[in-house]
Image (cartoon, rainbow, N blue to C red):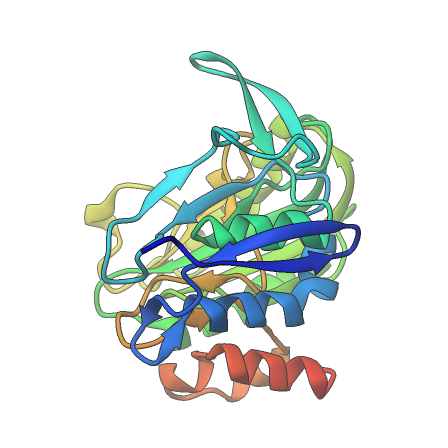
Length: 282
């Protein structure tokens, strides 16, 4: 049987969508993923624009194989934006999700998660700082919230950074972002490390800034290294493959929500919940 191809116009591009009824999670199909990404396009594309994207592809959904894709895939349309980067193995081209058609093209390929660096256009001009809070054994996202609330105070006292914003990673922890103005890689890494180590010194029983996994039990690890130009974090509003039962979303939360939450389930958001929050202006 010939593969069904459904033509869809996105802006001035026509895409041929395929395998729309393929289940990506129980009760959530590729069609549902495309609908979700269509709905969040106005907020997601500006977050991805001018940043080289790394994708977590899972063409057969959460139960199938998954892999990280950085290079522009063979057969990519000429109109797909791309950026040339220097890597350990020489130059490579990566997709830049600058427009709705590129986003839909990527999802149609089975790109479920969208990861980007902390810079736009130039890897030595970071426009934001990130603190990636990863809960160790015996800790959950509620423990991360307690750490995040103190980090908010610390970052507020730092020069050169905007207000810290909290995003539930959609997996286990939190991503915290603060805007900055064209910060080079090394100063960005140094600032994040300084902030992380300050809190680890304040709260050695519950926080670590050391990468060694044997130091993480009962603590929240503040991963400052995510500010390296070669590293990426999952974008807000991306779907996540973290749970086998249903998709979760990397979802922004308010500081009031971070302070009030008592159970991890309060901070796990489905695509429908993420869209409801957007509609409500959350």
